[in-house]
Length: 126
Image (cartoon, rainbow, N blue to C red; front, side, top):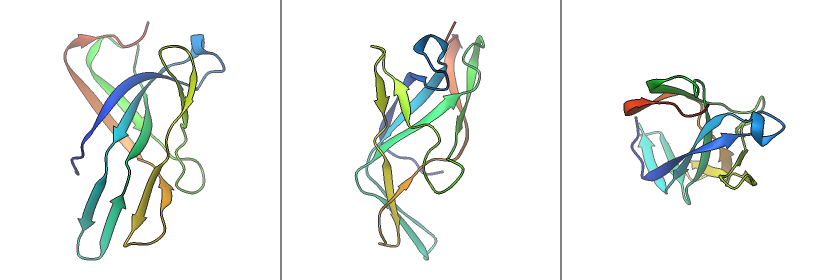
């Protein structure tokens, strides 16, 4: 696990063709990150960026919500690249750029499952 500075926001995802059919996603805004994994690999995210992950159970009345971050079928591009803000405007995420061992910067994404734990029972979407 690597702890980084940043923030998160709940947003409407774009899995549907309209805002009324949209679900819930969590938008992670990351800061600059540098880390070394063993003595062989050094990863750098120079500017930070955005990662958009779907909330799998937004209609559950629970303290624990599951998230899924996925990448496109080919390459390192994220599967989810747009979301609706609270005003209903479609917004594109800022690409998360990273490099390995000082090489060229490439678009990257987070791949995995996660959980959000709230202190009280919550309902994200009706």
